[in-house]
Image (cartoon, rainbow, N blue to C red; front, side, top):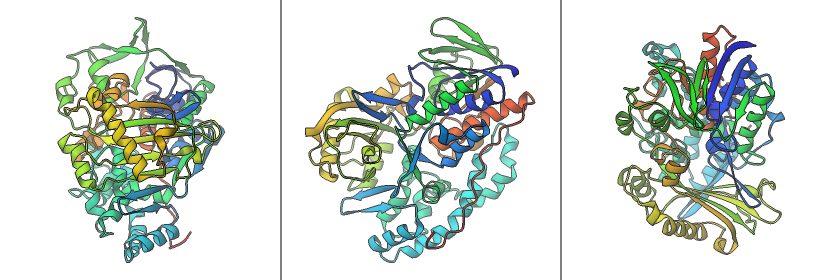
Length: 512
């Protein structure tokens, strides 16, 4: 047992990662979570007999999660069941559809069928992108707590692969010509809440890792990952206190001493890990005047991701359609510009539909389905009045679903419905500006220029989650938890926790 107490504020994926790893090393760990369940935006939503994921709906880079459990002396497969999805998803355009496969030969055949002549570009993608992935991932799986960290060999080796000054669309354009084929490889910029025309080109690793390592559904929903991690934390001796919101960090000068709970109770610790929306936490958990680099005024000037408009539909019907469908607006570029630059709602919108009951019978009663719909929209820094627009926009989204998918009569089959708007994300889920993917991932907010895992403005304070390095998305959030836990171990002379290294891809011929 290590005679040091670690407090974790928030039982989201990053906080649970750190809690697991530190508890496994013998630290006393206490997690405070304001909600009645763990997971944060990775928690479950239950509507009657229907169950939904609040936020993320599939798992990429499963090896990161496997490593968290292995480093804790456990096996992930003992805590939840995963199923690799094939095809990964369907892409629906106004004049046809295509499928994304993680098997090289199948995807090459799909490209040859839908975009004749472009399969040679995919051959070049398969040959070149493993190198970029290895170099760029190595820069993400490490901390950046000092300026000298920018001189590390991994980053210097990665520079030629970061495509500095080029967007994701620019880089994919070196492989493919047709706009819709390029979009099918770059819509993943939305995982970062960014436009593919503005997302840094180094994030070409996203379409690569999907196709190299696949994507996974978790039986019972991705919320079962957080439930499994919480079970592991408790098994390892950690304490998770639900329905226990933290009011503020207890700060003496520049040193965090512990937390004050909403009840007034004060709990002291040697280190505090903050797993809350970064800008919200710095605006609400730290007294005004304590911070300079991340003062409320400076936070307001940062760039933030887009938001999402959510529909959770409990249906009395099971539709025969793919597990994942991405529906592109007819004029996708205009839709993206409306989201990121015009801050208005598009008449013709893009959306993502998850139909998981086709794969997983645990989410709804027999013959019924739990359907999840995500629509990228502007964050709340614009002037959209969601109290006024909510109902009309919901109907517009349902119109799109009925027009563009197999769910031609979906309105007739709705038993349960829940809507989350950007304003709800901000007010009910404590998401700054309703920016569900946190701080934007532009070059000036990456690596050393992103809030540090060992927080630079307060001592004995660490940050995990999407607002710190390496960024948003479940795999990188797990890595943020690894980095913070590893630094705490190093500080107290405890064997460090290895941060996940990327598997070396097997060179892929045209079939596997």
